[in-house]
Length: 300
Image (tube, rainbow, N blue to C red; front, side, top):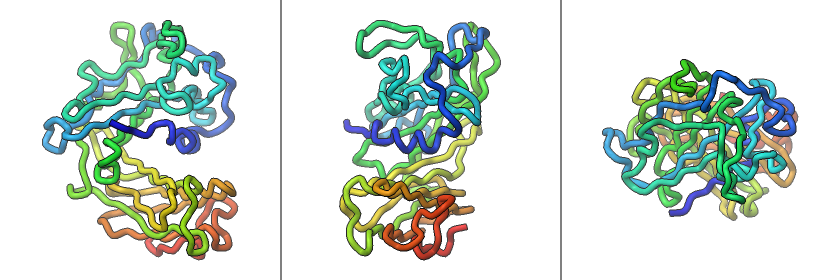
């Protein structure tokens, strides 16, 4: 099985953090009531009928410390004191792969404890990440060969109570049924992507899509995400997403210019967004798109 995790580090930093970062974990306060850490009552993933998910995949969890105006993701800061306790340095705090039919990864829930294993020394270190947790973001990746076919669900939890047996628990998530493009409630978008009519160089442009609306088996709100990186093509596609509001961000990594397009409610499979990064005004001040650089008249 092959998956992509570290490639998402830069985009996760961009969408997950605001404000100034502190130097590292040790600058964030600890909640003494969380003796063991925090937990999410989350079982994992199924198909739409509640049966085992027929594909392999992986789930990445981002740990966020701090506050809404000072978010800090320790595993995305390579200078972090406990960086060797991150399963994906520069990306996810934990990254768990599973085989086809094995998507119910967490029969007892997902736990973020106060001790993590240092992947270099093999020893356990006291990070107190569980005591310091502000938010946990949970994201699903299908097997890369089915990446555009299956929705990538994601959810976040920001509240952990009540406490039981030394753990602080979030709301119950239950199970998440993962749909495909052929299932109801899904959408996608794509179009041309060029530089003055020419193919985009490999890894020069990244397109991110966040949004959509769905719920877990307990009614907990979830959304979806997609990422596309240029590899010499002249077209792009998000792959499967949940229907609903979407935010699309196009970034030219050579110039740093970024353009945002917002959809109030995306449905269906025929949504079209054409981008030419050479057009005047692309990624102008305020990260706003104009229709000289992005041609789509459904965007809000």
